[in-house]
Image (tube, rainbow, N blue to C red; front, side, top):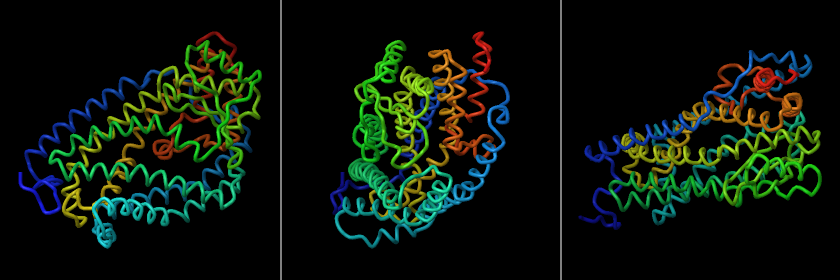
Length: 428
């Protein structure tokens, strides 16, 4: 094999060989089908649903009006942010602007890739910053955010730093592989899958503490009941943690993260102000995620999706490069286009991910009802969450498809009433 001056095998990084492209296309189709099959069989499509949701049955006119006003206030910046994201990604993919900016960088290839990720991410963040401030101002106006600008800025910069770290790690590995291997989509797909799995283990332990302080829930009736409920549910949980969310928000939330030795249930300290039975119901919902290994299955689907993305990148990078002004994936000027393609891919997959997520969340709701057999408290908890978080009680179809990862509060309440009728429990 002949070798170029920079040490790369002749043809490394290029994607113009028709035979190699056919092989990659076949692999893309096969792996894509595997991903769809895994997602289809792991998603609980037949979850119990209720009748037509009726916000007026459970929420006052004032509460509905406040939710509508908040939705109206945040709709414009939300759609502007979406449009801006598409425009920036489109410019990076379809024009040579990104390559021209990154072409000014000097140094070894790995340094140019690293700095390129920082530059593109920073420029994108600068463009989006005013919209972020607009949304933060609205959250403060409606009492959802308690942050000052210094705290808000710090959190945003931390988030950007984590994003840069993960993207740089991925792109450095990708370019290094492409410089050595002509069929770089094979190790890239394997690496993308592995990185997704490792990140799922590492993120709860390494990155989540960057944004919140976590403490074990103090000894008392609530902790005792929660651990007893987990034991009764036969769900091994390493700990129940309390996050100091009240320093930045009034919103109520809880979630499960990690699996195996990193699995823990996290409760916002704001939620602890709710009556204990409601807190227990929220945790019962989270136990449902652990019971059905939702984090593990989500990691598997995410890993397969990342592998599919790596192969698709191999097939697209050649045509995109001819338009965007670089020769191959090994050219550090390609960083902007790669990030743009990743952004567009995420936007396209978002609605599909939301469909799966809504069914998984509905199954966790049913699990909570099966475990507690208390639909009245479930409904009271849903009302508290909706009012405190100012949830959209009647989202339009477009917003529901684009943004809703959970069923709406009225849908969840209707499901609880259907569960009560099915199980012979008085309907709240």
